[in-house]
Length: 255
Image: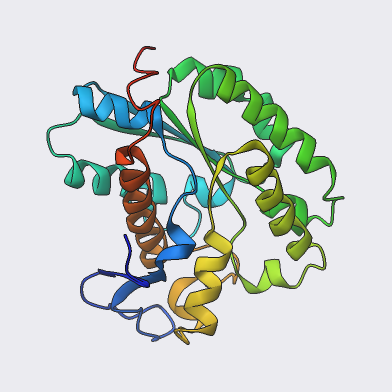
């Protein structure tokens, strides 16, 4: 993925409820979507022809709020994208999104809704609700570290996802602090981060795509197009990181 801009055709552009046409192509600079670290367990299972189980844990934008149907949530679209990329593989993406949750709430569900599924890869979308509720940002760092340590101890691949770039999030004074904190925690723990905030900011500020084209009318949640685009970009990022050559690429195939 060496090109400066990752361009993925997204099909025809239907009109939104407000009459604003959605974008015709799913775009983002490659440096915003490339994962920093390999996904050795994911890559090893794909290479060995073993089933791949992914758990997506998060809040309402993982659950799919704003989508026209559950099939258009980002986890559902991600499963479809990965199956298209790896047609011989058995790939399952389990949606464990619960609206309104914070990092503390999600961490409390890890045993019964993450580890119980025996995942090979966990996608952890976090940060939005703490910002929206004007909660202190600092405690999120220790909570993230706790979760990441548990996942790494179990040799499970993990990708964090930060908040959405949306008016109701941007109106909160701590949003940049939260984005920076998640980024710093990912770097310090050598965990992968999918930069949703930066990708959506790119759509708005560089591509000049109006918010109404990629957000629901509530100016907070994503819509079918943006969930689909995030899924496409994430699938490409996961595939590249999983296939990246690493000395540990053949480890971690077991449950």
